Length: 253
Image (cartoon, rainbow, N blue to C red; front, side, top):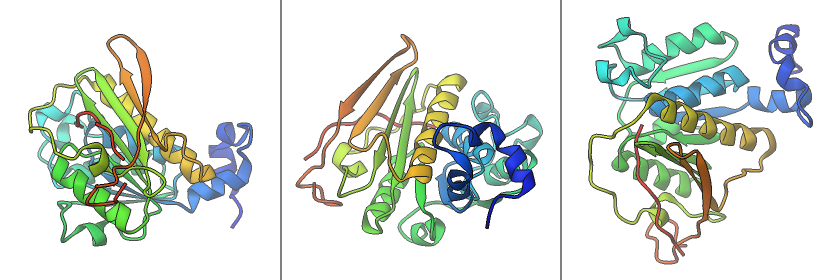
């Protein structure tokens, strides 16, 4: 179905991007994305997907809004403290773009639930703050040939890559062992910028099927405003995807 007059008006400024046009916008409208986590990364990623016109966004988180979330998780207003994060985020996002489907799911991501939660998503965004959930998502993605955009933050640093074995490593190639769990220091702008870049990588893939960060990990040092990248490769002994690995970084949201 072609774009409506409302859509043509709403997305006009991106429709005139070189190589974009109505066809690209229709690809976004027909896409389904699973956003794992409605924290700092998830808020920024979901916001940008919503504004860009991704047609179906499922947001999954098992937590409620806390006071300490509010320095970075901007989809949650103060009056929503104590409310489920998915409902809080969905309410805000629907107010920004009522033409797309935003589905809140308040459940924990684990081995028993992951297949049902991800469903028929075209793409997974890993915006989680814990490695058990991240490993579960990555394993499900690898076993079901679903591409995944991984982002992580710690302090003034962010990391970002696109994972889609066998063309790329999986998360277990990059992190054979989970780092120790700590309270994660984070500034709101770090989470917002990293989550926005995560959404841009997702939009690049959904609109063109050509991820820009396959085989590369982007490392963003926001303290010095220096960005660098590492080549990443599969680990042939990986128990999840079997590929030659390389160390990754830390995680937070």
